[in-house]
Amino acid sequence: MNLNELVNMKDASFGYEGKPAVTELNFSLKKGDYLFIVGENGGGKSTLVGGLLGLRKPLSGAAHVHVKKNRVGYLPQQTAAQKDFPASVYEVVISGRLPKTGLMPFYRKKDKAAALQNMEKLNVADLRKKCFRELSGGQQRRVLLARALCSADELLVLDEPAAGLDPESTRELYLLLERLRGDGLTLIMVSHDTANALRYATHILHLGGRQEFFGSPADYAATELGHRYLGNCFDD
Amino acid sequence: MTEILQMIKEMLGYQFIVRSLIVGVLVALCAALLGVSLVLKRYSMIGDGLSHVGFGALALSAALNAEPLTVSIPIVMAAAFLLLRLSENSKIKGDAAIALISTGALAVGVVIISQTTGMNTDVNNYMFGSILAMTGTDVKISVFFTIAVLVLFVVFYNKIFAVTFDENYARATGVHAGLYNTIIALLTSVVIVVGMRMTGALLISSLIIFPALTSMRLCRKWLTVTICSAVVSVVCFASGVVCSYIFAAPTGASVVIANIIMFGLFSLVARVRKAG
Image 1: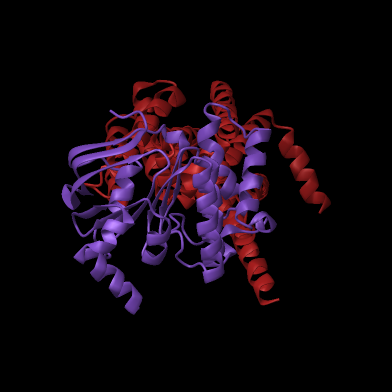
Image 2: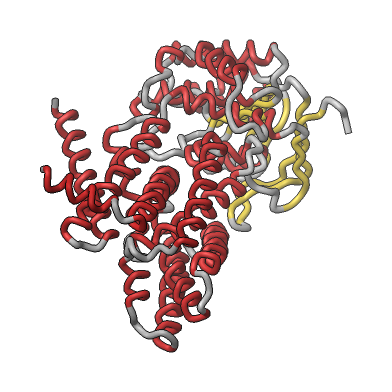
């Protein structure tokens, strides 16, 4: 095993209740890689994200993620919490520090400082006393991303991070992610944003119920699949 | 007004009432705190299911002539554990699993009672509660357990928030969500057994559900909802007990009615605030 290897899938498949949603996964990622997972809806992207996070075990094959769980951050596609959940922005963001506290019952000074710092990075520090459920969709995404940054020391997994963001916030998001990568973070992102995939990714994984492609953006653009998929996106 | 104050003074002259009040306030506090998480996790009915199990367990302890709390607490804890497992293993869905266990336990309890002691005052107390039901030993055990629940709640406060707000996130980042769910269920079972002596098996789950729902009408943060539920619960309990003494009404039912009135008030204020 390569020491820098972070993720390794060998003939892995993931699914629900024994039914595979995505199969034939064969890829590996190194520290500092930036993977975009693309493909049509229902192609198994979110299922794979669940697998990468250890929320579901592979139905077959082998799936290894060599990161301690409390060094992983995650931005879910939808807020799992229900609409009327009472929680302030600050309470949501600092809950991302919980994996770092171990057996300690309370948050320490450095946890509070980290939460504040990440809220500032995402421009939500002004909202910290606001109720999470009363924010706009885009603001909620930014708050949840701040929570993810509180947890992420090595690996950050994002399920459609740009959904609900306006173009300016999207641009800022990609710049922020570039900076985080510069700090040594590995990024895995589910996205429909193929233009930015070509610009930023080190690897692209195309899923359509199975692994259709894995490789560099340049190789992807050269394949018929990539050509077709990218072409579709430009038509939108 | 002076008459009411006179009656309260008279009431506090009875030592057994003071003891029961202390236990009641502690139970109301615990129930309200756990209730916030249970309601938001859509586990409200677990409280109801467990109270029926508690009824069966109390019937069993009466038949065995054993100390009621020492028999019921472990049985209800085991039921809580089983309920969580059942609802996670999705073959039987959560609400159906609760109905299975609660009606089953109730049936067993009723059969045990009919075969042994028969429907006497004790049984009536298990169903509808009585402030007179607590013995000296009961009070000691109750105080010990409720204080333990309060301490554990404070210790696990942040963890309970995390697994309630977003269980998947907690799991993905290595927080033992299953363990904390189990802790919540076990603490709930303790509160239910201790509380049902006073409010009765049929009404104890309202102590868990009402204060949380009431405070969510007005509060928008986890911390404020938690504190507000605790205050609402204790206030409703105290006023319910006083009313039950004055009108010679059952304690449990009076407390629940106080909670209903409070819920109505909070809803009204929320509506006025929204309109204004």
